[in-house]
Image 1: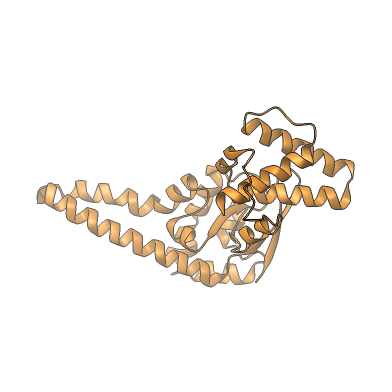
Image 2 (image 1 turned 180 degrees about the vertical axis):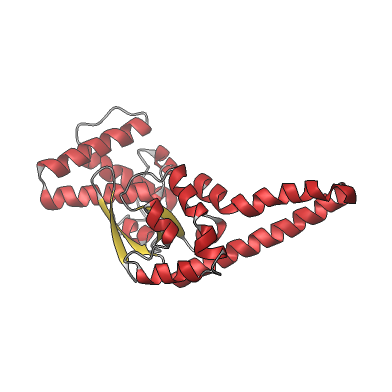
Length: 240
């Protein structure tokens, strides 16, 4: 499977698998089924509650759901519609910045020519011919659809060989508020600092430790490496 390297704002490079064409098509089909079923259910409920002379009100209620479904879910659900969530796909920015509403809006706007206006033909040709499997909307929005690797959690688990017979008490139980991507960044920072041990990587590690300590409402510890290792260990134990 094709891959892409995304450099985050913390100057950490994370490797993602690109979503394949068929994964994206299947996610679209799942979303289409959900839109169709929810529209039919809402139509039936509205029809029972509103008189036939008010059909226009029913359509005005259903239209926003049909039209804005993708934009709504991607913006409020961190780049994932229900179809993408089911297939573990996500929309992210190519430059590693946080995906904004304008990025999602641009992708949504170009669904008309990419998908609906060409029966998916333009999107399909664009995805298979572009370097990072991007349709036109992605290229203009500076986004890419990635697959959240199924083995990410296993990679985290392998960092520490926890003895299940040992009664280890987590030091920072609040780490469960972080998502797995944040912990992968922690893992990458630690790995690069140990491997290269230069000023830039040490600085990245210091900044990350300070940010995590702030999020956990803690005083920044002196030994930041041990702190981040403990954060990872606690996260793995509490979420595995």
